[in-house]
Amino acid sequence: MLLRRIARPLFASWFLSEGVDALRRPAAHVAVARGAVERLDASVPRGALGGALDAYRHPSDAQLATVVRVHGGATALAALLLATGRAPRVAALTLAALTLPLAAADAPASRKERRALSEQDKQERRTRFLRGLTLTGGALIAAADTAGRPSVRWRVEHARATRAATAKAAAAAATAAASKKAASKKIADAVH
Image (tube, rainbow, N blue to C red; front, side, top):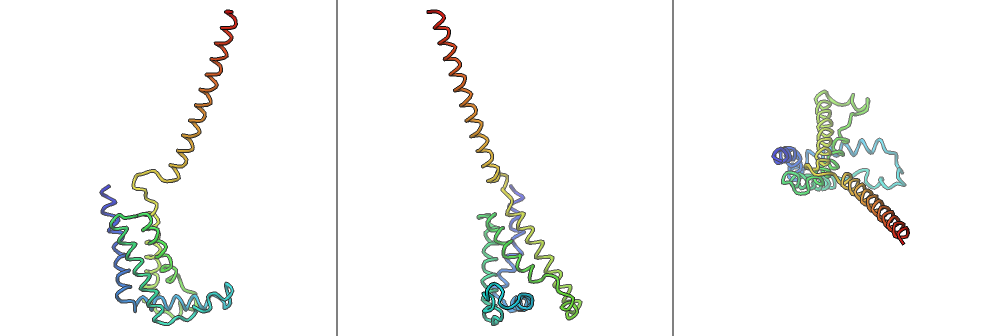
């Protein structure tokens, strides 16, 4: 459909732009990631999950830059796949999974944290949060798009219904054949 050919690349353009930007210039993305890691560090108690997170509480800027670049590369790749129509449902679901943590990183701050933020910072964070949620929702809708073909669920239900109808018809035919045979035998017995 023409609409999908136009809409998918348009939708993927933001993801592609952000992914490439994270690959080429990770510093700004690292600053946002650092804030998210610090908020997570403050909200998750030490020793949580058996201490599995304790080793990751204070990553270096180089480590965060690597994570940002990998995330950016994955986002750009998924956006390219969606834009070109290659595995669009998988690509869209991947974009949703990659974008949700970005929205979570910009989730509304606690009262104490809000007091420390300037009005401009609050507005920027709110904008990034809502954009992340919106794009996650859009990616989920794109992932659910079957391009006019029936979904797997419908195909399974249809196959089951067809199989049941075929079995019922076969049973009815067998019953009818048995009844016809019995009637023929009864007539033959009556004649002899």
